[in-house]
Amino acid sequence: MPKVVLKLGDDISTDIIYPGRFMATVLPTETPQYAFADHAEFNAKLKRGEIPPGSVIVAGKNFGCGSSREQAASCLKGHELVIVAKDFARIFLQNSINLGLRTVACPTIEASEGDELEILSDKVINKTTGREFNIVPLPKVRQAIIDAGGLIPYTRKRLLEERR
View 1 (tube, rainbow, N blue to C red):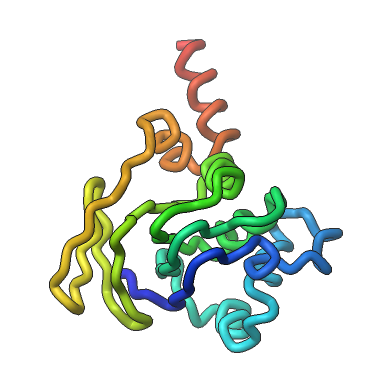
View 2: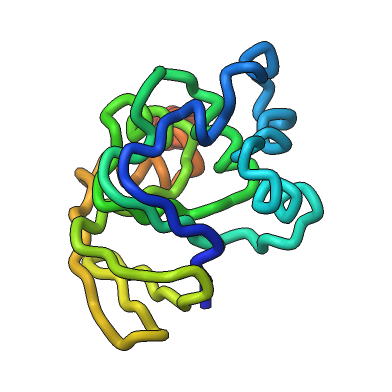
């Protein structure tokens, strides 16, 4: 069962997720090392591999606001984190979809670090507290892109299907 490994508030900017001083690094294989670089303890856990894939970051409103830097989504995808937020900044959300980062909009989410969450297609269940929270589902095509692992794998899959 996925656990909440980090709880954040509202207006978490892309500069918090992926600090601007690392913008010269753009390769998806290299960006994960800088995820939350200024949150030293959490960044160190990520680098040491102490955060298992599928772990959850819970945030408030406007997650990923600020610049349009794709690295903010890329660095999180590199650790296979799941982001559950009350809502997302528009450009961050699109970058996340394009890269296949699992994002879940859950306007009433309440969870603390260490809570176990079950994420279903229509709700998030906080197994620790027993409470349920409805999600705002993505349009089917956007969800299909995430499920495929991002826009490139989705497009590749669609092209192969068309050739058959």
